[in-house]
Amino acid sequence: MNQRPLIPSKNSPFTKTKVSLFTVLGGAILIAFSIIVGANLWSQYRIANEIIDTDIRHNLEQSQALFKTVLNGQLKLINNELKRLTRQEELGSFNRNDSLETIEQSFLTLLTEQNQVEASDFIVISNQNDTQCRNTHQTFFAATLDCMTMIKQFDSELYEWHLVKLPPLTQSPQAQPTLVLLTRAPLVSPSGHILGHLYGGIVLSGNFSLLNQTIRASGKLTFALGLAYQNHLIASSATPKSVEYRALEQATNAPNKLHKLKQQGIIAMSHDLSFEHTTVKNVRIVSALQTDVMRTLQHGVIKQTSSIAVLSILLAVLVVLLTLKLTLTPLNRLRTLATERDTNPFNPGPILEFQQLSHEVAQMLSELQASEQNLVEKRRLLELSHLQQQSLLSRNRKLLHQFFNLQEQERKYLAQELHDELGQPLAVINTDCYLIKKASAPGEPIFKGAESIQLNASEMADVVYNRIKSLRPMPLNDLGLYEAIRHMPAVSNLKLHGIQVTTDLPLTQPELADHIAIHIFRIIQEGLTNILKHSQATQAWVRLRIDSHNQQPQLLVLEIIDNGIGFDQQRLEQASGYGLSGMVERVHSMNGAWSLLRDAEQNFCIRISINLTHDQFAG
Image 1 (cartoon, helix red, strand yellow):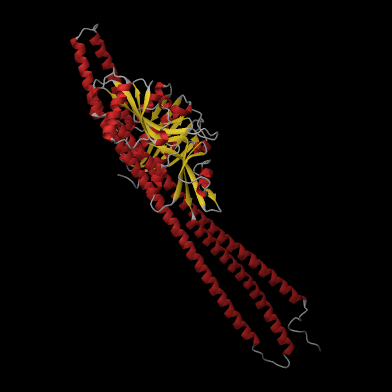
Image 2 (cartoon, rainbow, N blue to C red):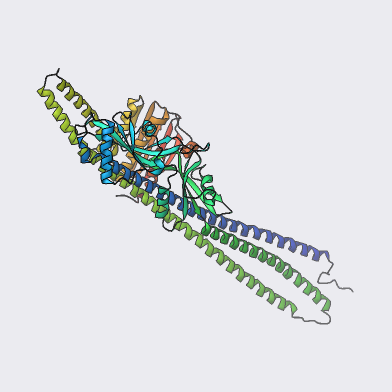
């Protein structure tokens, strides 16, 4: 009687089915493993690139902030220089009948004797009505400036800065207008009459001095700087046709965007130019940075990622081959045993095969654990870099908070100086005029002159008082935030222009930190000013709500609403004004959140919320 074989033969359908099944299983394991490893490596590569780009952006923004600091410092020096020149005792002998030539001659003599004019690129002297002017002091690149063209474009207050455009310095068809930052100071006679003005400023076009000062002040950081107007460079620290110059040209088109020259390793970015808390339209500061270190790090990440990917694929292939080998080898051994079972009843081969199999599996597990530990270490390094970036963001936020505090202290100091320096003389003038009027008859010329002087002094006192209120709101110190909001000048200005303003404030006022109160006041002031300038609204609302728990303020919600035209998020990102960006920076300095939306009546609304229990800068 024939016995049925215990083990299938080599050509048995059962054996072929087994081999096909394990082949498909090995391929599926290879594909799944490759997908998992590839996704993990791509995630790490993307995170590394984001960290590199963030570091580059921080260095570029640091160079541009340094230029703004140098520029603002130069502008303050020019302001102080003009004030010093107009207060010289040698100019006290002028009167309103002196001609411009007489005043200019005395002024030139004073400049020659002192020999201290260094801050301004030019100084222009004009008569009382600004109908005549003389170029009194100028540098070599300001020699062709037309003083009357500058004066006609100046529409700012005293000691404020204004950007004027003059004809190009060259006759080239591609030449851009000459840009000049301009300010002025009055020449006042001993009797109080304005005899003329002193104009001073900086020529931005072709001015390499400010750019080189910024680069020298940067220390170890190496970069190129440029000034652009209407997407054209008007000044650059880089030589034309150089790699840095091309990078600066590319970055002038879109602000706040990184532009990369992949072959040369240069990255550039532009920002709108700001000076004295004012942003200039169409004028940008552009910086370009050499990225050799960043590019080396990026290449290292790519090389490391590629190596891990290749090793992972080889490991997956090895796993599949071992799976097939471990699957087919026992079948072959069992088939051999079935063939030799009559001649050799005992063969320890299968035992040795299983021992070898266990050894190889243990070795594979050890290699997988080593790879996993390597991946964990790399993830830890990336998380550490992320924590460092968060620390830098927190430090920048603290610096922003300190900046606003210093700004408010400076405003308070300026308000006090205005009150002390101008308030008392105006009061004396008003009193003297009253005594003159009392000692003369109403029809006499001296009576009319005193009355005119008294009227001018009163108007000047009103101007000074409004300036003091805008610099330091007195009701904020005396009556608190709510009364300061109700009496702020911006509310009165809206009502004077026919815009109805409604303030919705709580009945009771909780105790808020001083910096929180002044930030809220400045945000409301800027929001109402924007409504007056841009919204075309007829109604406006200011709503303030403070949620409290156990008589302790928890959440402050502020809404500034108008029924005007509003604007979308894209227009907000392209806006060049300082107002909205200043509001956003104040909100961020308080760890707050803000949003633009439409309410149920489709009114445009700016909503700001601040968690008062997490104010890390309190006090």
